Length: 136
Image 1 (cartoon, helix red, strand yellow):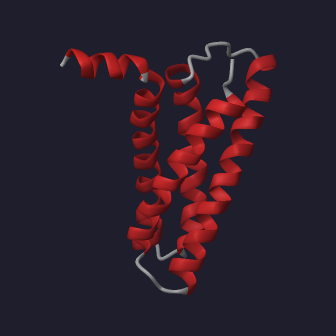
Image 2 (cartoon, rainbow, N blue to C red):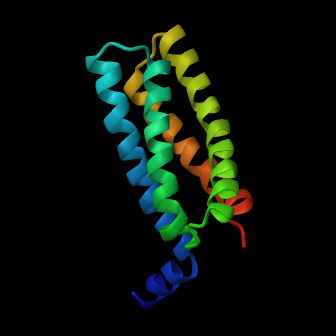
C-alpha cells in the first residue's frame, strides 16, 4: 500500500487531472446525450454544444485544482484562458470531425463513438494543458 501511495504522490497532477477529466467528461455527456438522443440534434451539433459546457467546467476546475494556478487577475487569466481555449478548440475540432464522420455520415453508434473520442480528448488535453497552458 505504501508503494501505491508513493506512486500516487509522485504523479499527483496526473491523478487529479484524471479525476477532473472524468468529471469534465461527465459534464460533456450530460449535455451531449439529451441533445443527441432526446432533442434529435445531429451528433456534431450536440458535440459542439457539449464541448462548450465542458471547456467552461474544465478551465474553472483545472486551473486551481490540477495545475495549482491561483492567480485570478486579468493579466494572468486572459492569456491563460486564451491558450486553454485554443488547445481545447484543437481537441474539440478533432473530436467533432471524428463524430461527424463516424456518426453523422457513417451512421455508427453516437454514444459509443462519443466515449471513444472522449478518451482521445482527455489525453490530448492533459498534455496541451501541461505543456502549453499552465506551465510554470
